[in-house]
Length: 258
Image (cartoon, rainbow, N blue to C red):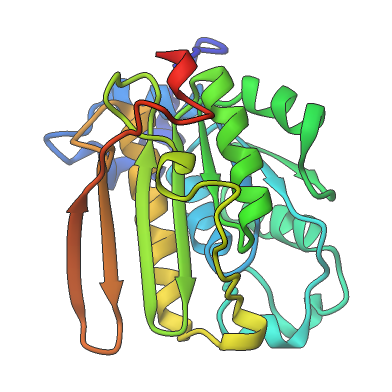
């Protein structure tokens, strides 16, 4: 992780983060690593809302939000950063204001655009972790390529109906797969979206919060991230499953970076 500045907590910050600092696995050093880190969140909807909330509340020093949508009334069933008063506003603007109200000691940048190409690559190069909270394969593959190129860990989440999944792709680990290893970009995969299929509201909180937890572990250096493991949750039966993931040695995206 790239340390961007020296950070020393004052009494107010020690109090703000005291419940983390009481954890044996979490130290002041871990908190300072988070304060010096930059997290990029692509998609500030159902998954991005809880993920951004917990990263901000936990003291991640710089957060960049990327989304080109406006708040819609249908979002309020599950997107916890927004209220009825936000309908019609830019999502990234409303989300930034809410996060800064939660924690004014951090920096939150709003990018009201669909991230792709050179702009995405440049942004990812500045990040310590990227959270993919989007709902379409084209954007997911673009994010994956950018993370592979810059060797930035990627926390990927997806939800539809009552099913959710989350994993970590971290090319700093030799045996880690990338997103393309699992879902080839040219494969015929059905695009399922909440707008047409529906989604159980608490599910996005469960998966988005898990993404935040994985990002915080990566930034702080504690615990064991989900690298090489896909965690799946069925909210209808309340069952978790975990499967091992293997990299594709012939992957068109990541094989040349090994």
